[in-house]
Amino acid sequence: MSVIIDLYHILTSNLYVILYEIRQTGLCGLSARDKKPTGDFLMTAVTKDPYSGLQLIELSHEWGHGVPSYPGQADVKMFRGVKHAQHGVLAWKINTVMHTGTHMNAPLHLVQRAKDLAAIAPDRLFGNGVVLGIAKASYGVITARDLESATPSVQEGDVVVIVTGWHHKYSDGLEYYGESPGLSRDAADWLVAKKCRMVAVDTPQVDHPLATSLAGHRGGPTMNRLVGAYKKATGLDPQKEHPHWNIAHKTILQADIPTIEQVGGDVDLLIGKRATFVATPWKFVHGDACPVRLVAMTDPDGTYRIPDGK
Image (cartoon, rainbow, N blue to C red; front, side, top):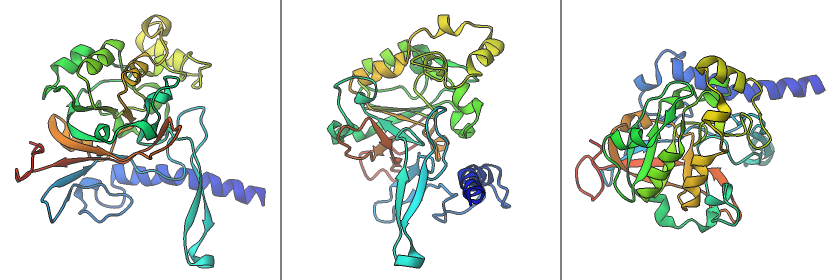
């Protein structure tokens, strides 16, 4: 029986990865971009509201059993508490770390006695902003100069979504978590100076991975190969290049700016464009983080006072 149970968990834990690869590679005959919107689990698409004419663009990864999780953290596990065949209703029991998939971090995550998710004002969760395309290779650093030179320019009070292209690597692999780009401290200072409403990134974490517990910080490494792989690939000393733990993320959260990590969906459609954004975290007392649905809105008809997405 234990063998059967173990096999079940192996298969279900890998189901997400299998479905994700089907979506990315088009193994079912068509690529995801070739398919018409169906509302299916494997699809993301631009949706046009028939009443307002607004276009809605999905910016989140799917979330569920066995989705990618940070090295050193437990997997998301879902169990049916009641099921249709037996009870005529479905309700799930979930064991999860909140920092999985596309998720929001409250200031409390890295700043003691700071605001929890429940204390974040609703106006922080909705507003105009920009999607900045800042492509970076493995171990790249996003600097203030990168942000300053990106177009369109960031305005005071904007929601800022930073896209490096790393969302295409979304998986449990060393590359996704360990080799991702990250923000420098001066980039974080620059965003704070702009009084950003929210900051979102398509990488697994705001900071460079060598500035986190994935490497040698805060009881790390949780990825034993990471420091050696970094030295071999770059020839750099991680302790000199990234001496401070989560310095960029902490700088942003200390300024009461909520962050969203692991942005995905159809974010590529908005690179270099302005849009209106809405995030829907839980009103979670003492909550440091939770999965979040991030959606962008554009107004191609110019009916409302939100960007046209052009």
